[in-house]
Structure formats: structure tokens, C-alpha cells
Image 1 (cartoon, rainbow, N blue to C red):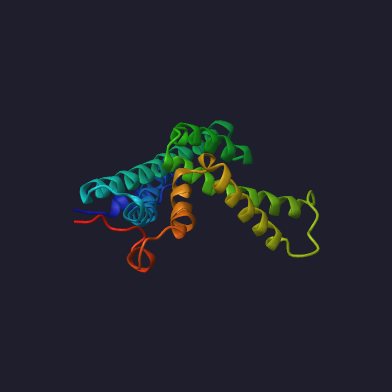
Image 2: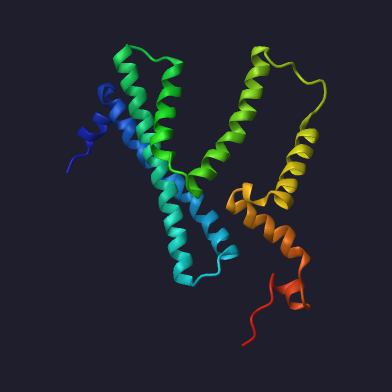
Length: 204
């Protein structure tokens, strides 16, 4: 069995778009599994009260959804970018935006926990990047001092205000984390649920 023809085909320019779509499915599938599995493992065993089987099923489901969605998105994005470049004869900046916007709507358009987390993760980084781009282009003046402490103060002030007085507006996973950090820290009955356990174990 010879691999040389296949290896040569990988280097042919006329196959590049199709091969990029193929690897664009493989890489995010692996990346999604690596990112989501540890996160789901920690969050599920920390906050879920179901059986071990239910917890493992939830971890596998979250990992599968994250990995599949990333793979489908990158596959779609690569394909749409290649299609636009082929139709117009060259690549333009708006190709990336259109391909990603359509792919995002098709793949991440369903309102569920996984898609919500991914989109909010991206939103914070997009806002930071747009601010930096605005300063590079001269649309936003360079700050004369470090504004990060002010930014941090506003973010933490707002999130705790929302948690204390408008909790349902926060994402469920954030609510669970903050409940563990703040609400559960105010409740204990004896030394066991003060130092060893978060909550008292039910009596046998």
C-alpha cells in the first residue's frame, strides 16, 4: 500500500480548499473535546446531584455538542470563504465576516448552554479587540493611564449587583458558580459543612 500519491495530492493547489475544509473539521473536533471535557467534568461533579451515570452522560453530551458545533462551524466557514473567493476571483475582507456570520447562525443559532457560553466567551474578546483596533486606527484616543483597574471595578460591581438583585438575568452556569462562592459561604451548621463539605450530608 503506497501513500505517496495521497501525500502528493495533499500538496496540490487545486485540492487545497477541499482539504482545508476536511482539516477544518478535524482540528476543531479535537480542540472542542479537549476544552469541553475537563470543564464539563469539573462543573458536573461540583454542582450536579445526579447519579454517576447521569453525570457521565451529561459530560459526554456537553463534550460532543461543543466538539461537533466547532467542527461544523469551521467546516462551513472554510467552505464559504473558498466559495466566495472562487466566485469573485480573489479574497476580500468581507468574505470572512459573511462566511462566519452565516456559519454562526446555522451552527450556533440554537439557544442552549453550550452555544451561549461560546458566544459570550467570544463577545468579551471581540469587544477588547475592537477597542484595540479603534486605537490603532485613531478612532479611540489612547488612554493616558492604565484603565484596567477601572474596568475591573465596573465588571465586578455589575456582576455582583446582578447576582444579588437580578439573578435570573445571569447565565445558569454563572449563577451556579456564584451561588457556590457567595450564598453557600453564608450557610453552615457544624464543623463538617464549615470546613469539609459545602453542605451537610444527609443522615443515614
